[in-house]
Image (cartoon, rainbow, N blue to C red; front, side):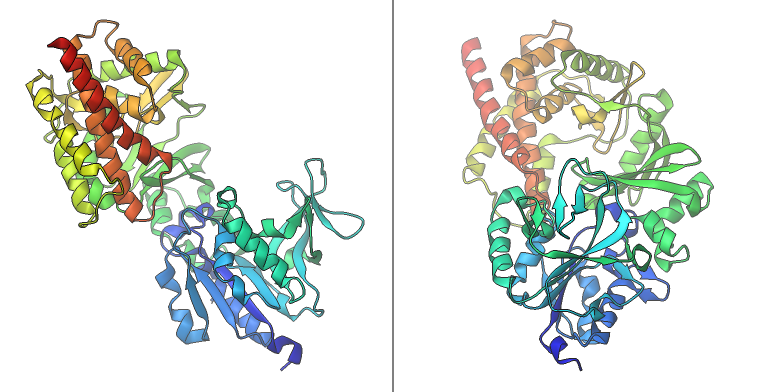
Length: 523
């Protein structure tokens, strides 16, 4: 054994969701992808062993249980990153910062033809490919320093493998701790700590671009190994079947980060674009997929939604045609909001019927139960709930024309294109008072009262009865409480919504007071 290797160790970062690897990552985490007859992370471990490096720590998060077998097989140490959904790998590395001492830091998605851990020399370095990359702002200057600038023409490719010796470990450990405690760096890669004044504090080390591959996407995997067993993916097989194409005709796969409930991605096939929806964590408890399929098949007949290609009434997988040159409604553009209210009113006038309804107060109770006895994060929740429930009496007394209602009629679910407007995402659609949709649009848009009143006037063409306006105020309070409970359930699953949760809860409190004031005035 090389004596210099005895004191070395390795940290493999494998906690991330790997959103760009969708849809492969719906079944396996990125580190367990197959290349040839090997698993990606196992190849890295074997190459470390070949270099007499046996002390290996792997930081896991997404599908963490999938990596447990490595403990017995290779005697590695697994460390869990429970915040992988809201923080990047800078946080992962900080969790194991005390392990940094003559250490290789390695991303789990690297495939190296030659063993990169047999390199001579004990100086710290960061691996750079000799391939030109126009998607970065990095360059090696004449002093063999890696710098970043906005005025670079010939950019360098960062590989991700790094060696940190004991001479600079303390400095980097301190910087890790400092950066990880600063929320500005929550979405940063760990390499941020290597830069001072836009210059990397360690030297670059070049490697031939043909001997190392970073595998971030489905198409990169297919390029390096078109016969990889990881390409035998349920979602890809489904797309292939429904569009009657081979999986090799599926290209330009791109994750769509928008959406509070689902993981969706866009893809191309035979010069057409599509969107594939894969339901997110916990949605099987929130959405009745059989009901959703019924709604989609109904509204699809009227051309008011995006074109449905496929929907599964059990698991919620859905394929729709992508609408080219489309955009979501801008809630601060009065003309676009006016068009949305016109579209919403026309949809309601269709008076479509389904066999089930959306029970507002029943859903609040349902979301509470999903918390499994855990109290709300809001100390005054019970008091707020009691006040909001007082509004039920007024709501029940008001006349209503029950019809199919979108329920989630938020600006993001209105698409503009070619002077037309489509409504999308009908997961919650049910029989309800259509005026509920106005309240939903308002609270998602974070409207103040003046904006709320303007929205109501747009829907009713400036002819809204006072009783209806007051009823919509009630709906705003109830829906605020409803969605704050929804957020609390998702929070328990590790899904964060930032200020959205607090804002929805504030609507519940504020609009109860508004209704109370208006009722006193009318007495």
